[in-house]
Image 1 (tube, one colour):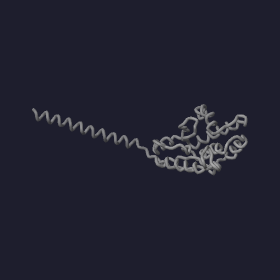
Image 2 (cartoon, rainbow, N blue to C red; image 1 turned 180 degrees about the vertical axis):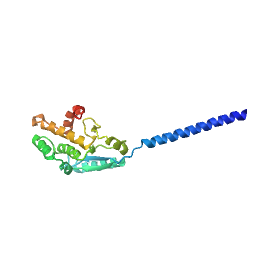
Image 3 (cartoon, rainbow, N blue to C red; image 1 turned 180 degrees about the horizontal axis):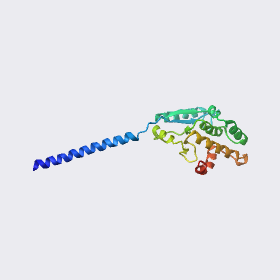
Image 4 (spheres, helix red, strand yellow; image 1 turned 90 degrees about the vertical axis):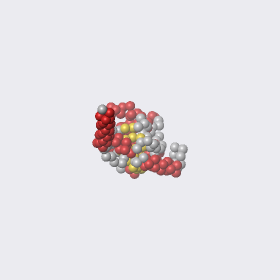
Length: 209
């Protein structure tokens, strides 16, 4: 009787062990099915030096910051690309936007560059960040999975410090920004891409339908 009970308990233990093994295998299979191959995402920033520096920093200080930005993102597995004025000039509306900014006459050289980056991104699409935006816990795989949807996503509301969007979405936002600038006069005072973006942002959900 004792031996019979012992065998019964042992069989139960073996059954539980087999069940646990099968559960682990099933979980491993599920993980394998959920795994979707992803390509290394590319994060872009825009930099065109302002002669003599700007924003309280020398030209060299901006270059040092740019190098630190690149190192930060690459350390998290991202590919990096630095866009310049040459990239912005490839967009067919470069001269149009430049003329609008020149006519307003109150846009600093630094803020002109902030507008020009929208031209460069509309011509390339994808991820963009300011070069003083450093990545901490945002690895490349997460970025790759977000970017595949192409939806215009700003991670800091109307502050364009980190944005992901398809080329088509970048173009749509650029055209809205140009229209907003065309409605301005010198009497409206200071503006920047962030000011323009702040005006557009509350209507974005409707405008992108």
